[in-house]
Image 1: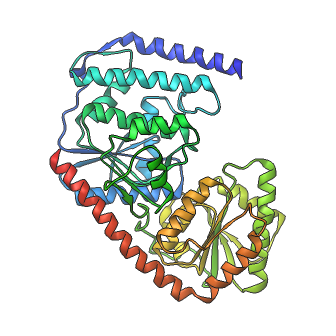
Image 2 (image 1 turned 60 degrees about the horizontal axis):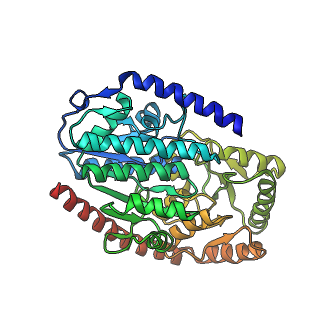
Image 3 (image 1 turned 60 degrees about the vertical axis):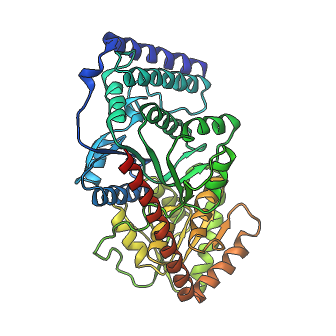
Length: 450
């Protein structure tokens, strides 16, 4: 660990030496004159189906509602985002420009290194100092032209819009800290910031709580995609009031493919994956999930379609099918297209999932859903999402000793009460749509003032 940290510091110094060749960067050389502009940031750009659905729905909504504004999507992977969302403008996200994510001297991957965290925060302070210089139209110091360009983008834009997602949490630390930095920079420039449909919180420790308050207390508007958990975590850092409320996930009304994807008329969709698990946990949860699947195979005539939301999900599917092969299983081929996955779920009878966005796709299509959780992170995201649609009872904790009996009871209820469940989901969607319009009306007011 020490040797790796020393090598990391050496790489950082080499990078700083290169950037200091242009020690002073005068702001007039970097300043970009544009018309009205909204910058969009989020957790997308990594091949995650749900994140891309959120991104696409957000960009289309903003483009339609704010026709006189230039909408710019900030992404860690411009080529990928251009392929996924070709009708929009894309530029690099702060995690790339500020911290060289996935490049030489990557300062974004904090893992468990205290030194990397200290360097991340130190560099954040340098960037904040330059923001004050940029605000005063003074020369910038100790940063490269890419960072300077980002600062002036934030200074000149009319709004920074955080697309929905679960990336501002203690479990996604580097993204949380990056988001905090962006919010503070916008405060320096007096640029309004809004957050749409977030899972936020799970701070993990007192420092993250204090740091989150430092960054988020000046955000103009924060909406969350659950009724309780995120709002409670915001209250822990003193953030509550009329500008903190729940809306639906940004992907609820995303597009779906017009073409049927599965040549079956009577099937269930299922997703589970390995994120956050060690090897012993992987084997344990595969066996637990198999007990639930075996019950379905023995008591229904459904076929099961495994739906990957990220290419890594296929690892868990392959392990399961190899261990428990069955002719009633089918694995949908992953190709990054959220529209196809949504159509697969829309044509199914029921969805069983460990991930969050199959719940959202299913709710948008009024498909009964059973959530599987194995940590506070999944409980926060999944049960929080289900509760918005009056479906919170349909979740089981795989860690619980009663998980199997709970699953049988809930699956039986879903199978026998599908129409009532669909009606309940539909009624709650209408209420959440009103909340979304409330959020957008407040955004209208912010942009009008700005």
